[in-house]
Image 1: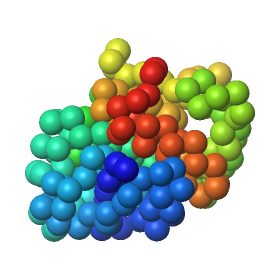
Image 2 (image 1 turned 90 degrees about the vertical axis):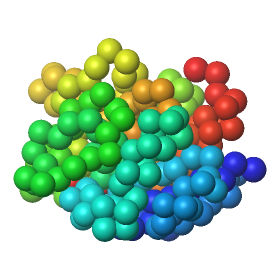
Image 3 (image 1 turned 45 degrees about the horizontal axis):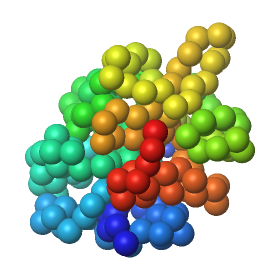
Image 4 (image 1 turned 90 degrees about the horizontal axis):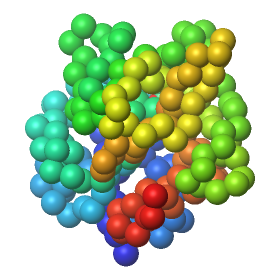
Length: 200
Ligand code: GLN
């Protein structure tokens, strides 16, 4: 059984633990650098990226996480987790840093500062014919992306494409929160990637 860590400094850790366990993984809450040695993959949950960034630095997890990402640890980031994995943010706070790894530019709170949540059914080929109910909570979207980035799903407000699920090498990210819907196909897909059994 693969062991998947959930970064547990801030955010909706418990929901991801539940989703990963129903997808057949063992889980560990990650708060210390040495705990990264015990895991085969990592989830960075939704929450608030500015706070998560500060805590990751305070817990001295930033450099070990950047190294683990660069060395190929499979990581799935949801919402604030997507922001943490982005190489660039359009509107971060002045001292906000990300871990990076995904060649994307994200816009925080992209659905509008007044829009707390928004839902849409998305078709994601890799997850089968049934649409995924995507729940966006003060969510980012992708503004720009590099040629190495595979777009799995997008929203199209005013006809402009904004990716909301992307993959690049060992990294997977969604603007939305599959952990809150009870549909664990995204987590199963990630667990399968970690097992190395996904045929893209
Ligand atoms: N708006 C939050 C941020 O900037 C993300 C919201 C979420 O993770 N649900 O980090």
